[in-house]
Every structure is written in C-alpha cells, then in structure tokens.
Image 1 (spheres, one colour):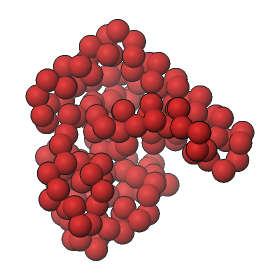
Image 2 (cartoon, helix red, strand yellow; image 1 turned 90 degrees about the vertical axis):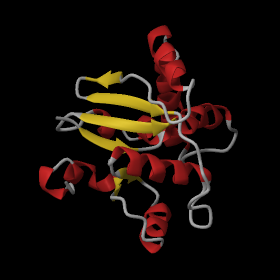
Image 3 (cartoon, one colour; image 1 turned 60 degrees about the vertical axis):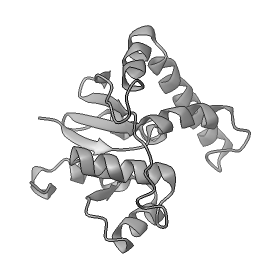
Image 4 (cartoon, helix red, strand yellow; image 1 turned 90 degrees about the horizontal axis):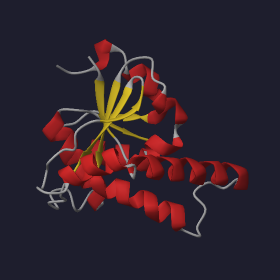
Length: 169
C-alpha cells in the first residue's frame, strides 16, 4: 500500500529524494501548482541562490513539464480539469511513485491564515485524508497556529513519514 501526500508540483521536481522513496508513494498535487511550474521555468528571478543549483532546479522543472506534456500524461491531466475537485488518473513518475493531480478550488475558508494554494493543499489534505508534505516552515507554523486538523510534515523528515506508525488511522 502506498503512502499518500499532498505536495506542490515544484517540490516533486526539486527534491530528487522524493522520486526514490523507500516505500511506494502517491503525491497528490493541486493543478495550480502544476501551472506554477511554467512560471518558475520562465521567471527571470532565481529559485536558488547558487547559480549552479538554480540551473539544476530549472532543468528538473523543465524535465517534469516535458514529462507531463507527453500525450498520455497530458490527456490524464485534462481529464481532471472538466469538473471541480476531480482527480486525474495516476501518472507514473518512477517504480514506486505516482502523481495524481486535483482540480482543487480555493474556497477562502482559511483566507486569513493561508494563501490560495496553501488553502487548496489543506482542503485536499482533508478530503483525501493525506498529510501535507512541504519545505515551507512558515506554512507548517500557520497550520499549527490556525489549529487546522491535518497532518503536515517537513520534507526533511520525508523518510520518517514513510514509517507506518506515524499515520493517524
């Protein structure tokens, strides 16, 4: 059985260890974060402070975009766009990794605490009963402060999150 996490598409591209987990994983991604990949790719602003690291990250983002634009994967993504809150069929990213894209909508429920994409991630987490995986400590802190009833993990703890005993049932 695979572990499921709600995550932004750019983090799947940036963090290589997410593509080689020690156990099967499904990443559930808001569609808006897939569209953000194009913004990151074309932005003149660097993503990383080190130029070599930045180029590596931009290349990884381009690879993910290219993969998602392949005809079969594009068709899967388009299926999710027909109805709000629909999910794409799983897109295989590796031997033990699948990606599911959700056509989520920000309902402003957490507007005073979270930005629209963060709100979508929280709503997906609640709907799918899957924890959020992020590298944004401020986002984690806002979830805790707002007492939002979801699990959230730092990407630095990714391997730990694959342990069966930490998930609420």
